[in-house]
Image 1 (tube, rainbow over the protein chains, first blue to last red):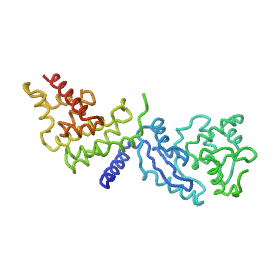
Image 2: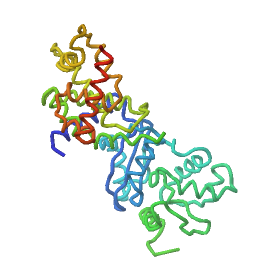
Image 3: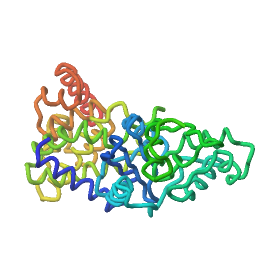
Image 4: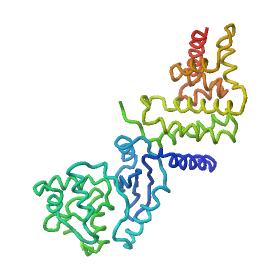
Length: 193
Length: 155
């Protein structure tokens, strides 16, 4: 794309934001795990797409479930990127970002909000999360809620393990979960468990 | 109804064509403003768009309107109106601009876009075809059908 057209499109983006037409702003950003897709609405961060997820599909999904006014707008996500970079460097232990929970409803959202309160460097079991969300017996549903977390890493579903300490599952693949827990000093880097 | 694609997809696919056509219609400098107005109007209307079958034609129609607005704002007699009026109603009493453009606006999308691009943006058939994503024959046919309909409407 020519520099002139780039500048023209950049101006369009800025005006769209000014006029309140940017319903979903997104950017693809590098991380130690590969590219992350970050998307936010006027309410806050709404979606973090992990490297093993298809970014185009995530954008189509956002267009359908939030608004088709989806535009690439990197500057809108500067603060999110800054905090994630610091987190991956081990220099940030608490995200201070507005979140938009609209992609999860009901029980799942309650589970995710409970997960969001697990402190850095600590873990909880799926059972505890089910209880915190108001239904101790819905352990499997709590697991599903973790698996469908639309804002992984920032909402730390990687801090939820099986009772007994087994890793359980992770949308971004178990190696990523393991490395995040190592980063937070929970695991010592020995394989498995 | 299938869901609309993310607007970024629309921008990626059609911004070059829209900009090129606007440059042809209003000149390089004014094309910049018209481009902004076109895509802002499109983005504003986008969630309510009911048929995404011809996004390109839809965008080009908006671009065309913005080009007309530009010519009007600059106090020039909009060229396309004069030309289409001549074609459409040679013997009839002169139509007010709005009536003519209302008639153009009422054409089916392909015909409307073809007429707008030919007489509004002064594009040759080959470029109309490129803009509409069809063959030059199909573009010529859409233009022909559109003009035929206009003549009938405005007779």
